[in-house]
Every structure is written in structure tokens, then in C-alpha cells.
Image (tube, rainbow, N blue to C red; front, side):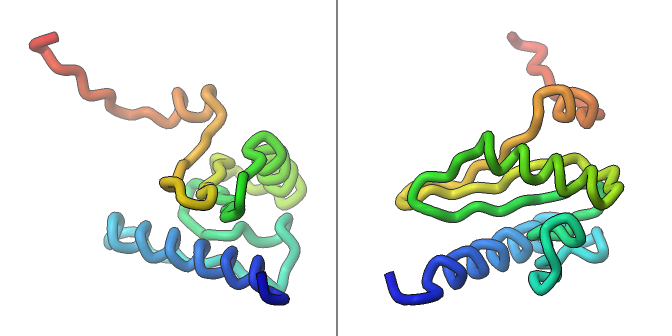
Length: 116
């Protein structure tokens, strides 16, 4: 990989996540890539109201470490947003990871098929 290639890959992934969120939720204002000249405690990788998103794009993401990072960053910044990790390993699909309790608390509607 060329020098700075990992940063470029990470930046491109953050931009992709922000763009896809804006496309999916056009009514939400302020979805964007975070301010990357700040440290993680000051600004998330992607800004989405109500969430604190840490993005990881690498050969094999360490989800547990990334989750601990985003939880600590949220605590340091007094950010009430739900911490989550958007990750994509090489040649894999993108995943979003939440703590189970946060996911349960965020569910306003669960769609149940009455047919079974």
C-alpha cells in the first residue's frame, strides 16, 4: 500500500457512509463526515443526529476495540448519541454494530409478520 493509503481508504469509506445515510434519510439535516482534524472525542467519523458513528475500513476490523473507542469518545465528549461502528473488511459487505441494549432501546417499531 502506498504511504497514506490507509488514511485515504478510511476517508473514502467515511465519505461513502455519510453519502449513503444522506440518500436514505434526506429529511435529516446535518449528516456529514466529521471534522477529521479533531480527535475522535471531539468529532465522530460520521455525524448522524442521535448516533455517534466510528468507521473502520481495513483488512480485518477489530469491532470490539472500535466499539470501546467510540464509547469512550462519546463519554469524553458528553455525547448522548448511540455509539455504533460502521465497518467493512476487505472484500466484504459493510456492517453496522450496536450494543444490544442500545439497539433494544432504540427500537420504536418492530415489524412482525402476522402470518408467522
